[in-house]
Length: 143
Image 1 (tube, rainbow, N blue to C red):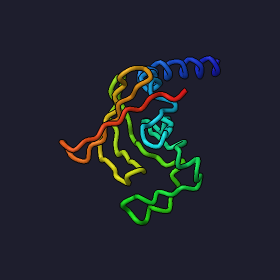
Image 2: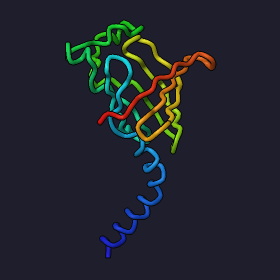
Image 3: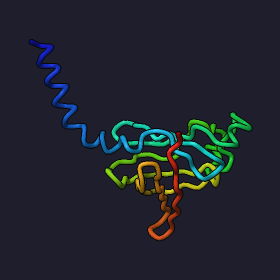
Image 4: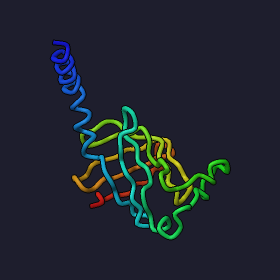
C-alpha cells in the first residue's frame, strides 16, 4: 500500500512539473558558438538552466587556458573549460530570460539576456549590459 501511494505521488509530482521540464528540453544539450568554434552545454542548474564551456579551438591548443580577459583580476586564474557563461535561464517554450551572461573571449558580461529558439537547431542568445546596449549571437545545435 505504501509503495502504491509513493508511486501515485511521484506520478502526480511529475505531471505538475512536466510542462516546465518539457519546455526546457528544447534547449538542453550542446550548442556551437560562433567564436573560436566553441561548444557550450546547456544543462539544468537547480530550477533553471545554465550553460558551461565544453570545447573551443583555443582549448584544444591549450586545455589549461585561463580566463585572462576577465575584467576582475581575481577571476583571471579560473579555467575556461567548465566555466559557466550563462545562468538562471527560465521561461519557454520559445523565449527564456537569462542572466547574467559572460563572454570569455572578450571578458565582458551582461546582466540580463534572452534565449530565443528560432528553430529546433538554432538559438539566438542576446546579452544586454543596458536597455539599448545588447549583442546577439546565434548558436547552432552541435551534433
